[in-house]
Amino acid sequence: MFFGLNTAVKGLLASQRSLYITNHNIDNANTKGYSRQQGSQRATSPFELPGVGFLGTGTEIYDIKRVRDSFVDFKYWNENAPMGEWEVKKNILTEIEKLMGEPSDSSFRKYLDDFYTSLDEMSKDASDDSYRKPVRENALAFTKHINETAIRLENMMKETEKAMEIKVKNINNLATQIGSLNRQIYSAEINGQQANDLRDRRELLVDELSKIVNVRVDESSEGKYTVSVSGISIVDHTTVNKVKFDKNSEEKVFWENGSPMNLKSGELKGLIDLYNGDGKDNNYRGIPYYINKLNSFAKGFATKFNEQHRMGYGLDGTTNGIDFFKFDSDNPAATITLDNKIMEDLKNIAAASKSPGDAEDNNNLLAIIKLREDKEFFTGDDSQGTPDDFIKSILSSLAVDSLQSKRIYGTQELIQQNAELKRKSISGVSEEEEMADMVRFQHVYVASARMITTMDTIIETTINRLGLVGR
Image 1 (tube, one colour):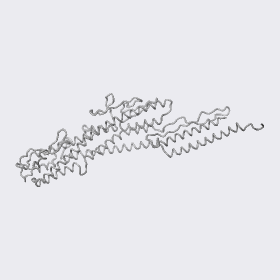
Image 2 (tube, one colour):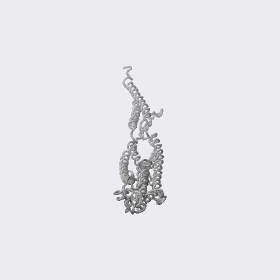
Image 3 (tube, helix red, strand yellow):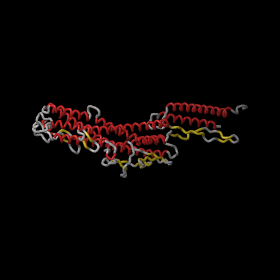
């Protein structure tokens, strides 16, 4: 008698649960990392009527699953690390370009031009202090620009070191959270059902980790979840293998057991390359490369300029052998400035080539000016030629490195965006689709409710009205 009523109730409950799932999807349409969920529905076991056949007993929601493609996740994580690496390199190289200031009124070339222009003006009348003073002021401006650039590059090294330390802490924090979620998910899924929302939270953490270091994810049939970096497990189900940072080592990052991490890509790899990259032996040209270049320029320029300056005489005729620049040989770019005697007295600028420093004698000054065109001013292995050639070589290397980082990052970003769009097309929540499902499930719910009303009427008639005739 109540067979049909039970069938209708099952339909009512199934449509009700489908509405709950739809409601959950709509609520999380803007939740980062959320995967759309679907109820798995099937017909319940039929009832056999002898001589008639099998009579259906209704429907049920037997499982709730995430709509997720593991291959798309693998591709996303695989491409996320290179994008993170080149994003870091692009950003820092762009900052170095800003420091160099080319082309602008605060560039090396501009300060160098101003300095030599003042020397040219002084050659017109080397005895006049009004011509000598601009030489000192422009030389000071030039050296201060070198000082400031060197100090900012050193600060950038410190910031990069701090960023590496923070990234290592983030890695350990994310790995710990993933391990904790593994424990929760494993406990929740003992009965065979999937903990969908917990899995979404775990995959979101892997997304973050995959941008910092190159990761690979594996999940066994028993539900054991492993995250590895370059073949070594950082999360082995509930066990976490932490990472440590050592700023005094070349590798910088190590596993807990002391073995170095062989990073292939990721933000941390980009930071390490920028911090260690001296450009030697085909190494990456990072911040140390540009610091070394700036030091080589400052030291080479000051040394060559001083050699010629010491050959001349000042206005008092007793200043032969005085340096124009001074610097600390351990850190020339950050310390280069004018010699104290030049700062104290403008007469000590050695313009004359003979003693006693005749006011009309500017031959040594002309020789100093001519040095700018000397193709052997710098004779290093990889930077030769005039001061302008040396600066051009630094700027061209920086331009090539920066352009390379921007191009590779742009390519990786495009690949990543395609993977993200593919992901969203599969797992993302479409409000239009959910609204259509809501209407569909609502209609089924109403139809099931009406069926219950109909069955109730049938039962009432059967119990209360049949058999009244003849009483």
